Image (tube, rainbow, N blue to C red):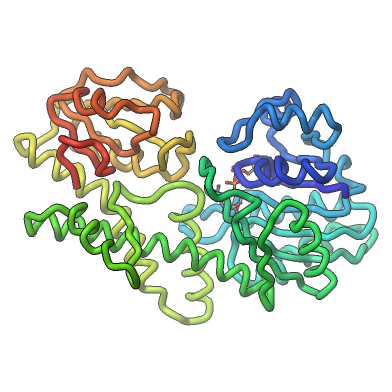
Length: 401
Ligand SMILES: NC(=O)c1ccc[n+]([C@@H]2O[C@H](COP(=O)([O-])OP(=O)(O)OC[C@H]3O[C@@H](n4cnc5c(N)ncnc54)[C@H](O)[C@@H]3O)[C@@H](O)[C@H]2O)c1
């Protein structure tokens, strides 16, 4: 099968790697630097091995391109482009729109178009199908389906093969072809009754995480005020074999999904006149965590951080990935700067951020651990400053949430 995958980032490249074991994949992306690296067999995504990419290229099963006409013969097109928020935290479908233009104006014959990008219910039906048709000069009748992506970058136990995949087509034929495509590399396909159910399920999965992370973050503040350990309390609650799921406190949420997707749900809720109060409050609680942490650190250090050297350790949004999108480390650093601290950051995986190199571990009076990568030596982290505040709960001996 000839498959075109629009967007070669975390989602698109991961799908390309799995699909190219069974199909001829063209990875279309408008970032020419990434495309050129990919064609040399160099992966920029954790979880996609450069060796696998190089073998797929050598077998003639993978090629990246910036040239839209290269997808003209595709039988299946997968959309995996960003769906961020605008400045006023509204869904930004401009990347979807541009992908629809590429697809509509390039395809020469009917294809199955599957959206894997996360968006609100109705996106496939009311934006993608009309969007592709608008740019299709030949008025070709394509099939349309949704299969929201669940990849967790850097994770090895759950992957494309064993993670159940939701899907639904706009027509039965679209659903059937979607099933047969994904069944070549995914063991567990779950068909739902409409694209809107699949789209909403994806948003709810991430909203569930965001709300529970906010709840545990709020509880961390309550536990501290009560003078008890939040971690011991959560471990105690977690001995209940049913009806409880453990979430851990942190400096907040980051990445392309958890801080963003709930706002897509809140957006449709508002359009339908339903107040999404949990989502709004969860957002606020998570965004307030950096301020709370910096205030705790200041309180422990004479009530002020003015002129004090503070190093933030781990700036990606989660362990073992280099992704800094929406990272709470940024808010921690902003808060420290606003309190007059002299800040630096250390991250052996991120290495370069905002045009600045990672500084060496240590050399500050205060360290705040935001993300602990597995390659980091915990005892070196603990010794990196006379005062270490650990937001992860993993550095024994440090002060923490
Ligand atoms: N990253 C995750 O963990 C994850 C998990 C599940 C779902 N998602 C969803 O998947 C979608 C993609 O996310 P991602 O993390 O892969 O983003 P990403 O930023 O890593 O990758 C997107 C890629 O698309 C390219 N691109 C942008 N516009 C394009 C266009 N018009 N044509 C071709 N290429 C274009 C970019 O250059 C980039 O390489 C989003 O909707 C996201 O919410 C992401």
